[in-house]
Amino acid sequence: MRWRLGVRLGVIFLGLFLCLNGIPLLVFEVPRVGELLAMGWIQLWSALMPTLGNAVFGIEGPISTMPAGSSDMTWNYVQEFWYLVIAAVGAIGCAAYVRRQSTYDTILGWFRIIVRYSLAQHMFSYGLIKVFGRQMALDPLMLERTYADSSPAGLLWTFMGFSPTYQAFAGLAEVMGAVLLLSRRTTTLGALILIGVLANVAMMNFCFDVPVKIYSSFFLLSAVFLAAPDVRRILDVFVRNRGTDPVDHSAPRLGRGLGIARVVAKAGFVLLVSWWGVEQWQQRAARLARADDRPAFHGVWDVDQFELEGEPQPGELRWRRLLVAHPGMAMVHTANGERRRFSLEHDAANDTLTLTRLDVSEPPRVLAVARLASDELVLTGPPGPGRATIHLRRRDTEHAYILMRGFHWVQEVPDTR
Image (tube, rainbow, N blue to C red; front, side):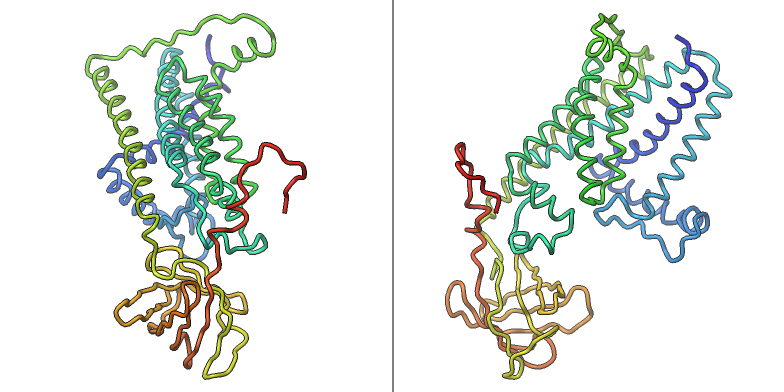
């Protein structure tokens, strides 16, 4: 069947757009080499941003390209715009100069290969980290936070982190779809599974304002692209109750050199995925081994009394809570709602804590520690101007109701507190 002009333009445009997104991300996952290429890629876009971003869109101020855990930064949207431009120019040029139907079939075949492995790579990456419970996890900072104080993304993270079983289930669905993408015969099935999985992921990202909306939309579009050629056969079987003819899933004809390269590349991809799995398992084992090796003063400490120069203090000077969840890191909540981040160093010999602000340039503060009990202590020293005496009591987050509630087959009364 010959492709109409609109189909040719649409397929080439979408294929180019997905490849422009997918190829860099796929290459960046190659150990060692990928890190260097990623640094070069960031530097290239940093050099282009003043022209492609600031000048074209009239954006004032520098556009940061430094990775910050978000795919929804300003530079990402600028990048996607130019990907769309390149894909549109490429589709028009291809439609204008390529006439042979067999050439379009070959181009589509290569697009599908690239999109298959790009999507599989991301689903293995995101899926395995969920399977081993390393993407979301509860910690004292989350248990201390009220719903009103949570960001929408933080609320989603807490919801997912509460249940490692559900998180692993979600990860297994992503891994299952990725495995099926590795074979031409099962690509459509894998794509259909991932459409369901990724539609849910994308909706959560949009509805809870998680800053990976661009990536999740790209992954979902990739799965739709892979399933689209079989949409008529899918409708015949599941909607029209008709039979359908089989499809030729044989490998594209390649020369000897390209054939060997294809086998080597696929074997390398499988080894890379296996390495990811082993790495995630090792990191999970290491995390479990460190479970009891908590930082000094680990937990949530409520301030019972805060005196500055012997006088009780309200407002911004008064501490309300001290949180220590990670080695060398602490957070202080003040009475007026401010949150201050510190590096924390414990001198066990002298029993002192050294707090250094991370977000503001201030001299380190050294506080003497007096332990009244395992869950009670007094800090004395200069947390800011003047000398303070701070009485703190550790909150029992390990026995929080949400962690102790457990599972019940029988519930006479719903528990929705």
